[in-house]
Image 1 (cartoon, helix red, strand yellow):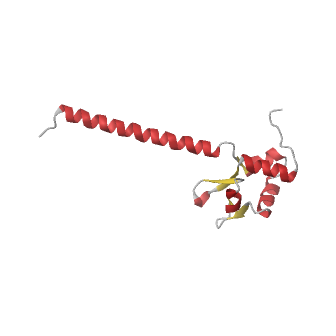
Image 2: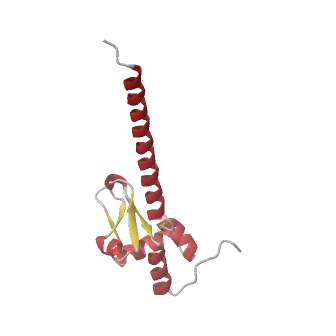
Length: 121
């Protein structure tokens, strides 16, 4: 017993609408994720911007309670640093790594009393 042509066309249209909605939802999720991390820098890039060594900045962030070593040996932002808006985690928990937010970089500039390097010069 074959379906009438109208039902077939309706099923195809319904599937295409579903696909379009799923695609739009994925695109929106990707946009939100990009915005969430806009302006954030890795510790390495932030160290370069501040004119200090990567190791020195990791040590400073650890000493000041911004980062801790996780069970896998990776640096992980502390809850305090995240709650203050200074750092964010990016990636799955098993491999997450901290990124400094613009607010975190401003706080470091204030604490260190330095001017960030301007790479555009």
